[in-house]
Amino acid sequence: MPYKKSEPDDPMELVGVVLPADAEAMRDMAYAFAEEFVRMGYDKRQLLSVFQNPYYAGAHGACRTLGETEILTIIDECINVWGRTTVVVQDVQEVQAVQPPPSSSPATRGRKEVGA
Image (cartoon, rainbow, N blue to C red; front, side):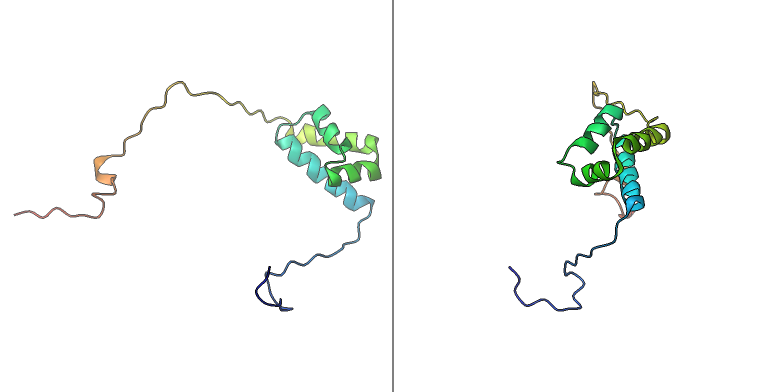
């Protein structure tokens, strides 16, 4: 609950605007969704299921507007460009402790030795 009434020039005020969207804007949005999910490692089948799932409202809306054939074309293009990345996660068998050099430890950093 706000403590005071919001001011018109408040930069932190949440403002929503409606922008005109045509088929080209939907196509650009579909490319953005496809590129993002392909770069996360999704394959063609997984990505098509994102566009077909109403839970993903933006992607699903693009699929309904453009049609499945156009979405498949966009998916294929994104996979050809971004689908070459493979991520491999390996478990480390033994973690080695890395000891910093004695001169760089925080306790001795910045101190000068005073000789007699």
